[in-house]
Length: 388
Image (cartoon, rainbow, N blue to C red; front, side):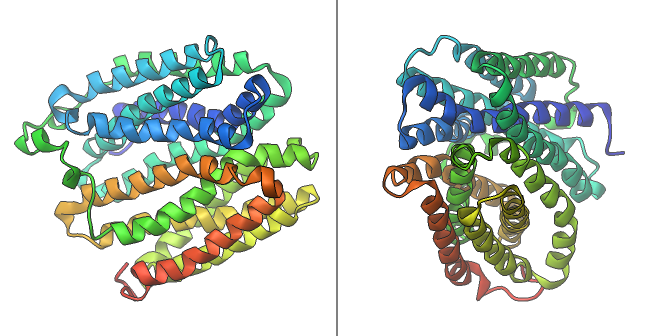
């Protein structure tokens, strides 16, 4: 049975934390700009620092997760996250806000490392693929509702109430985690974990070439998340933009099962090449946007493109390595994914004063186009049908 009480509680914790995570990614840039007169680059850095903190959190607990225990790490992560939400109310300058964002990311990184690892122990081995798929829906729903709520709430609520709402998610997650039952097999006495702080236990060299392509696409996605609300305000489409990520996630939700079947039968190339082409088209359409239908259509194209690129690239990463290295392959994928989303807003925010938001999205189309030959060199030319 997949849907046990523990499975549902872990998915619920993941959903609440990721909901706040995506909500604040949208909110933090405009908050920094309006409250502290941050430049676009600095506002992008504020948004992306949570991703950097998340990456740090994953590294910090990777070597102690099985020795300290899932429950303790999970509770500590939730406490760090919840306290950081409350610190938004006292961060009275830009450096302090950056520190809060980084601390929030550390908490989310700890929580995510526990939930994504623990869930594997809660699923029957014979149904691991199906169970992970169901669990991932909690993240997809958060991806749908987080940016949607972020853009919507900014129009009707002051920022301090939005931060208070997010701290409420943390408190609910804490009390939920207290009642969570950790299965006995989730605390293995494995001496391998004592050396888990070594870099080789996080990175797999075979996956790095493909992960570099993921880094390029993730950089574009990070900039999209951080700057879409600014761009929508400039176009007087702020209300419509609240539905952009909702449609983006719905399209991912609907298209991933089809993409998964194509991947299993024909290989990654049949998904990734069309996905990257749609990503280029989506960014071009976004740059040309003048009306709500154009904005939402770009969301559909980018949802099919970026959304299916990410999931297919992750699956292709796993097929590049033997079963014993799948943990490292997954870690490599997410490290480069998080890094791209984290640094994208800062690096690309630098060019906004010189070219504006419209030209920024043209630039993202160019970067996405570069990803096509990069993917061919890194993975596409070596892997044909049924080879990932």
